[in-house]
Image (cartoon, rainbow, N blue to C red):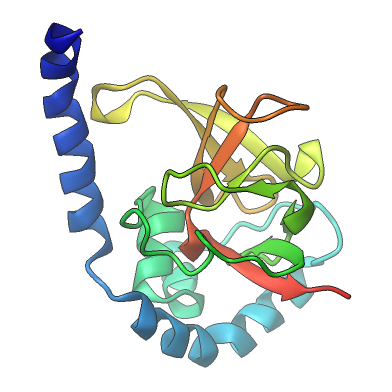
Length: 183
């Protein structure tokens, strides 16, 4: 057992070191920057049909205009926020989590659970066509990446160690989400 730990330890250290390098910005700053771009993002999603699954395809320059630097790094460049640093990892509000890029409904608070990983975790998306998955073999690991079904934003990863009824754990970056409260 110790031999397995010693073997896996460098990979774990590399992963968390990479996470720290990628984010670089404090979450408090994110709130202020998000407020500055929310109106532009709203206009973009209205133009693209926010209630339809019509693909949203924008240039790199356009994504940089509507996203904060941290949102851009995580959603468009496949970054990862630091563990336990995200706004929604311990959040208990009732509502819908939407894609920060295109405003598509992704997850419901009814499927959110505390996985202890430091990222918001869900056992199912709102709709199977609202997210898609792709193989991710980066960082010397085999994982399954989760992407927005409309704009291909990187959201996080899905693992097969979640609770019933699906047994899945969608481990999602808070920065990739926007919460909308429901009654």
